[in-house]
Length: 115
Image 1: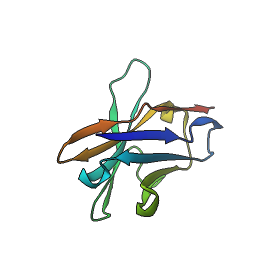
Image 2 (image 1 turned 120 degrees about the vertical axis):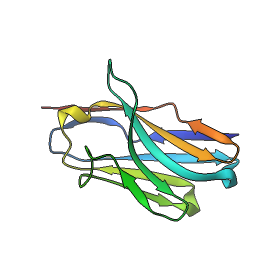
Image 3 (image 1 turned 180 degrees about the vertical axis):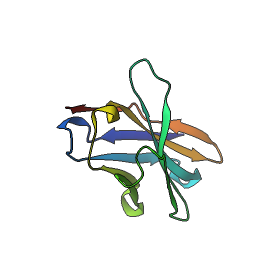
Image 4 (image 1 turned 90 degrees about the vertical axis):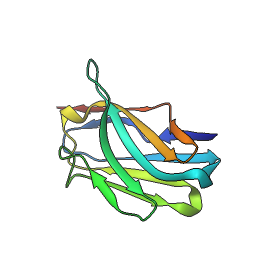
């Protein structure tokens, strides 16, 4: 089992920045990919960014150039640096870990961007 704990959400004005953190514990050696997803009210959960074991990152077109995913392997933590935030970025952000034993989700952290 893998446990994921997100932090760093909050309320920010449009154009501002936030950094989300996701710390993993448990069977972390089974994980090969970590990603961030988000779900706005009334909408399905959508992919935001992913970083694989090689360190290669992928982004949704809607956040490319504004968001950066990174990791600190020593801390078992990955980060989502969000800049130039827009009201349409408002959502609950979820961390996900994928590995050979299964997929795991965090509890989510709310990000609200005011106009």
